[in-house]
Image (cartoon, rainbow, N blue to C red):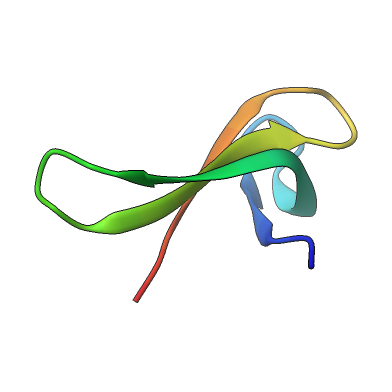
Length: 47
C-alpha cells in the first residue's frame, strides 16, 4: 500500500515511493519517502 503525504514543492497531497518506517528523535513513528512527481523527500507522521 502506498502512503499519501503532503509535498511542499508540489503543494499537494501525493503518493510516496521508496517508503520506510522511521522513528524520530521524539520517539514518534513516521514514514519517510519521496514524491512520485518531483522526487522531493517527504515525511508523514503516524498516529
